[in-house]
Image 1 (spheres, rainbow, N blue to C red):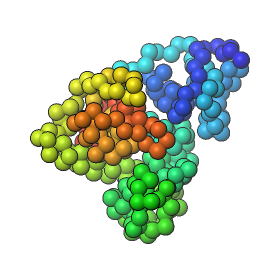
Image 2 (cartoon, one colour):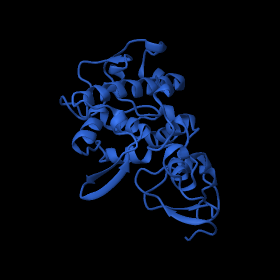
Image 3 (spheres, rainbow, N blue to C red):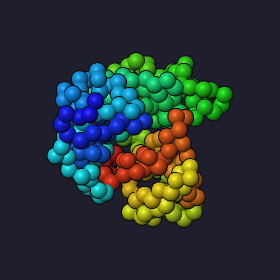
Length: 263
């Protein structure tokens, strides 16, 4: 069915209504303006069950997608875009914090055992690290350490404020570790900011402007050493679902973010 009004858009892998609104309308919070082909709005349930290849309709007065710099918004806007993609639910949906995916990553920002160990929330002898150590997913068989009052996985999933603190702690830790890794080659993140670099992504050439918000997102997907390998050696890596680090560096790049936002 063709759109009765507005412009047609076909759902791609990884899309959420928030991400589409951010990229196509310039503001993720405009996702409620996106309609079904028959002209009816999406319910929260519909929005959480999008299918690849599904047709949706953007408002006909859509502005062009935003460019780089501060055009995409501030740190909070970046977090909302990232959280919508990670959780698969639109911005503002409280169920974002309760999501658990097929590999056992949890919450709005899909935290895993290894990251929460590094942040001091959790401990286990055999964490999931990209399928390493013979573990094929996060099983959460370890113990919680009571940080910020969290003593169980369910408590973490039902604590939005703690998850928002934890993602800021993760960004801060990842930035420190990235600068340490780059420092071994007498470089730092500042050497790369606002540079345009071209990478080979499975045979496709991609030129991306390096920004702090993109670096933070890339490190959240592939760790600080994944970003270091990309910047130093043009080494493109992928997560367990095949998502490229370049997608995160590009999609979440261009937000007005400084270390003061999360340190």
